[in-house]
Amino acid sequence: MATTTTSSNDTTAASSPSTPLPDVTEVTIHPLVLLSATDHYHRVARGTRKRAVGVLLGSSSRGTVDATNSFAVPFEEDSKNSEVFYLDHNYLENMLAMFRKVHAKERVVGFYSTGPQIRSNDLRIFDLVKRFVPAGTITPPVFVIIDVRPGRESIPTTAYRVVEEVDSNVPTAGKGGDGSGGAAEVRKTFAHVPSLIGAMEAEEVGVEHLLRDINDPTVSTVANLVKAKLSGLSTLTEKLVEMKDYLTAVTEGRMKPNSEIIANMQAIVNLLPNLNVEELVRSMLVKNNDMHMVIYLSALIRCVIALHDLVLNKIAYNEEVGDGLGEVVVKAKKGEAGEEKKEDDDAKVSKK
Image (tube, rainbow, N blue to C red):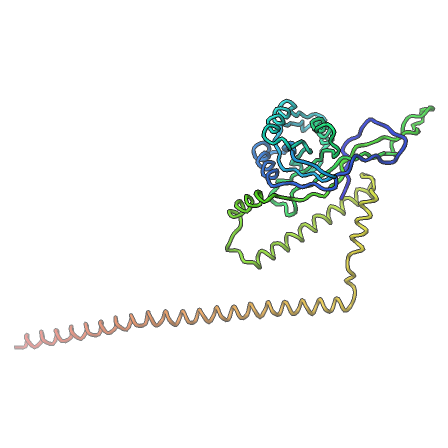
């Protein structure tokens, strides 16, 4: 998981290397939030390069954020100048006041965007949304990207929290004006937070009713298993490509190295099994050949059974059609015999 720096703060510090905000350990997104964000995107930004932005409502406890509801906020940003954007504060305040009358326990826990990537204005939006968080709240608001693209195979949510990091590579002007100084610059950045899709019992029932119109009952269990395997492999490929892009950016100097991310990658690589063992390769080949033989025999048996059924159908059809032709031939012969007898009678009458 990468930590993406989007903009900087003018504050400087000369003490600790990192000053993190209170930690957010987990973010749970409920189905109602996904439905609301998808509807918001299709109404506002479908078919364009725009994105939809809204406010997340819910509760938080001991670093766990539970987003149970949300509402859309009028939002516009200039495509030419990334620093220019518009967010309707009055609309946000009025909606919050109405939601408090209906759901008194729900409060602002963050904001969402349809992304699908972090943009330079997101930190500024975070500062604006933070003003509406109730006073005395320990857990800071979160930022969730909800990917509404239909081709996505993995979980459509990506959660972030804001941390403060000291960038010691930024020089400050010294006494001699040579660009060397003492204090380093503190930057606010987004760091990944584990996210999951959770639902209460009532929400699970509603989702099941919605899925009844989506799932195809004619699809077999084997097809569903194969589809799940393909979905898992495509997600694994996506994550590997993301890791490769991060390492490439760090190598080229476009991104600062993060020791935690690199340690996680090293742990993943260390957990990979050694596939160069001769016994393992031989067993894999034998198992693969056995499975292919079963598949080949199954296809051959199915083909023979299909041909057998075709022959039986052909025989039955010929018997039915053959009986009908026999009756027609008998009737034709009887008709010819009658005509010949009539001609003989006419010939006898003419001779007399």
